[in-house]
Image (cartoon, rainbow, N blue to C red; front, side):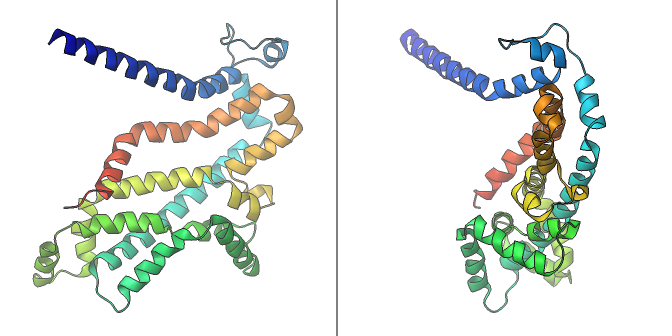
Length: 281
């Protein structure tokens, strides 16, 4: 018994040591980013050998990030884009998932199969098509041009449709006998039951929108519509970003912080929603 306990202790020690090493490797770039952001410009340039700590931290770099570049405008644009896109996507996803999981209409299975087949199309081809469409509609350098191509997601519809399908049919038939409409059944029964998955989809979409880079970079060349992703790239390419590295790192910290906080708060909901998507019955 003692020998078995010793083996189990040794195994756990090795596992925790490897996990700790992996966590250190993952978190070190974030630590270095935050550390650089609180170093003064002169102290950073005076370091011939980078130091792993600083004895005189400063927040001046964060003030410079907001005063010397339009970082606040990028934040507002990103907030508008993220909230509008996520709200429209939720409406489209919930209604589509409900239709595919509960309603009977001609060609439903064929339509859903074709929908899933869209996941096989490379993203680059979709971007080209969307770019031509948005350009033809004169929606470049506008919020609608940023938002419209991102309001649907085949994966999210599939994930939520699988969750809706797990709800017993007897509940639906009983609701119909009581005179409940489909929309009322959706809002009063299906959405509350599948709330963890809907919360997960919402959080993942917010993260996706906040990190969106290729499409905003492609469809906007007017700085009034820049998001934080392509805005920070513009800062990096400018003289400010190349010369004042600590202020640049401060801007990156400010941009990254909302997503980190969001994930830390809702990480359990994310894992619960994803696990529900793969559970039948």
